Image 1: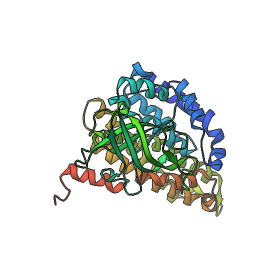
Image 2: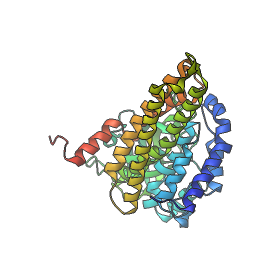
Image 3: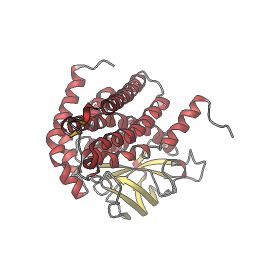
Image 4: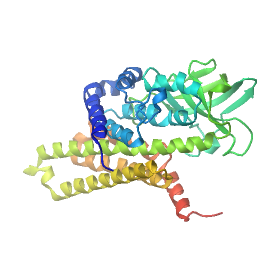
Length: 383
């Protein structure tokens, strides 16, 4: 894809924002275990960066996804991966279905404030017994007059302690598991919602992640997103944007790992010469950079096809799988070249070693991506 001046302007604006508003505070937020979502999203909203590909009628810029992809790649410059994840939840996980299928009232009253950075949104799909297998969720939204009454629990919910509303997937009937689910916009101040203490995670320490409990929570039926019973299909569509967002963000973050490694190994001398001068080191870094560029090309090809109106499920699944694998191999290889310094907690590469491991799990595990790809190849067992 050939980028225009407008593409580059969005990328450069976001890069400057990350360098001035995020990176100077990364260490403090990591230590505190939380990032200031309302503050950062508020500033991004003022810059018009939270609705790049959202409808103009509801506060967005109305541009196509390629412009948003430039924003995402620039977001990857952040040295606090919890911020990357929290922002992309706002733009690529909690809001695509509302923007595409929500009523005008929902988009006016709930989507617009999110695009403006006045509200924080979250996506509530995963449950203790249902992560990648979304069809197994147990949360119920029972019809009662003009309301849905929601009972159940959601697990590993990003932005949950700061969110103003959730895009919730729940069972709204006893029908078949792929046609009994609906997406419902749930305000977090609704009576009966309880949020646990932040979960203690291996990585993504600055991302507030918690379990949410719903005890007879009443939500008006006009908070239904799209059609009742179509929630599974809409969530699968949302997953495509979530998976592509992970690819674009990770491309730049993984490059930062390599850049940091080049800087360190060019200065650190072992056996009389810089570590970088060893062929095994600079050849490996060159190989890793090539792999990242291949991922970037795959992600941009998916964007090209998406803009042409084609189904990008296979390509997005391939890119997400590749991003997950590189998110494991790149930090691991780079950490090795730091020696003892790579084992220190505050090293950015070691942080990525912990944080980016989630890429192979969240948004559909590697094994699920391979299952999708195999099915579309006609290579998946029929029985």
